[in-house]
Amino acid sequence: MDKLLYVAMSGAKETLRAQAANTHNLANASTTGFKADLSAFQSRAVTGPGYASRVYATDQTVGWDHGIGSVQQTGNPLDLAIHGEGFFAVQDASGKEAYTRAGDLHVDPTGQLLTATGLPVLGDNGPISVPPSTSVTVGSDGTISIVPLGQSPQTSANVGRIKLVNPPLSTVQRSADGLFRTTDGTPAVADASTTVNSGALESSNVDLASCMVNMIELSRRFDLQIKALAHGAGRRRRVRQIAYHGLNARLAAAQPSLNR
Image 1 (tube, rainbow, N blue to C red):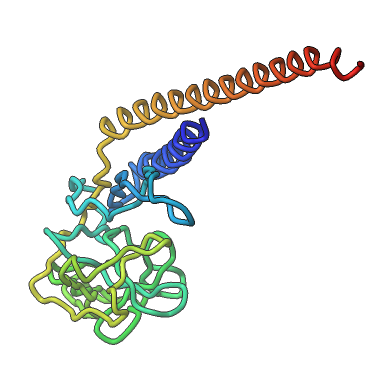
Image 2 (image 1 turned 180 degrees about the vertical axis):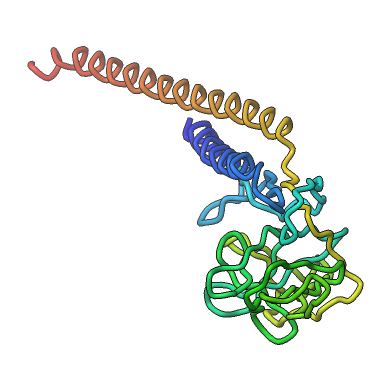
């Protein structure tokens, strides 16, 4: 009986974990450059004293979907989409280098080039600053050019180049903050072959239809496990009731002999 309860309980718990990962993907279906999480159920033996006779399923995130999302044209010169594989280099909250696919950039009032989430964009010599200008353009290699204030449109100046990297995906991991980092923590080398498309953004690669089907399937699986828990608990109560009534019957039968 306890085996049934344990298996159903662990199954319900891991199904909720899988549903959380699926919901996370759904919530980021419209997030620029988002890569869907991949999760899978795995069999794992119960550790501890006794015989290794019990196995339960666990759900774990096994990586992310490397697929590239569709590219949407925006017309904004600071909206950038990477061609193929690669990442933009940014400075994370701790001041270290990290990477992202989200290319919705903007210049803040102090002239610093930032991502939509407020992270500084890195260039060849650290965070990029853009002087006051009448227009900003970004070349396919990430070079940023401006027309300074008070100058004619024929006058342009380069103010930096966005660091674009393309390390092997086997050496990259995604952290809890959604940013990518190298597994050994060392900064990736700038890749001259990685190019960008200005005036466009890469959308999320989440497959909404698959996520909705998965959500329904996980909900049904959770309901089945809860029903199994309720059935197992009911059987245990009935067994206890039968044992209790049987004990009372034996005590009643033995009572006359005790009174002699």
